[in-house]
Length: 255
Image (tube, rainbow, N blue to C red; front, side):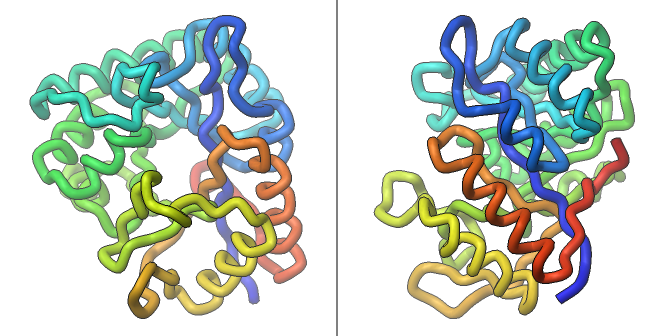
């Protein structure tokens, strides 16, 4: 097997004195980092620290906006109009860009978080609002979107650079969407099983799904979530297994 793929993780998701995951260790493994913008998680100090860690390692940086719902970790849909969602995304990404300027880092792309990402996958109006917002922000930002979604299409229609993402540690439904976390088996905890599935996908282009035949998905980047205890071990194993299979880990955007 040959080829190139990006490996990303959602980081900077602590706030105040409460850390979430081992960001420093994960940044030694991944090639891109989606850093929380103070909505579902994160704050100015956490952003600054994570931005500096990423920049020091040459990891490409993305903003990770989500619903302003820390108690729910951005995994609950908050009723908002598409225009309100656009302004929320602008405020969070703008905050990240401001802190990045102080940290000597550059934000290169936007990846919506959690319930916002899942909504933008299916709701064309929300997807357009996010794409239009990202296009209006400074920095020539790209969008990292869940593969096969409305957000991908909206980004292309807005002439934004758009890259497709799959998940190493999440189960899929037959329609290509992520299995809801409330369902058994939605999160993959076994690093070997996750790596096996990923390698099969990269070889065939077909993603296994629950209760149906595998489906085709595009992939420029693979996500390993950073908010569980096994995240770093899983990311390291995946990186090692990819290298052993002849796959080069490379960011989808230049650092």
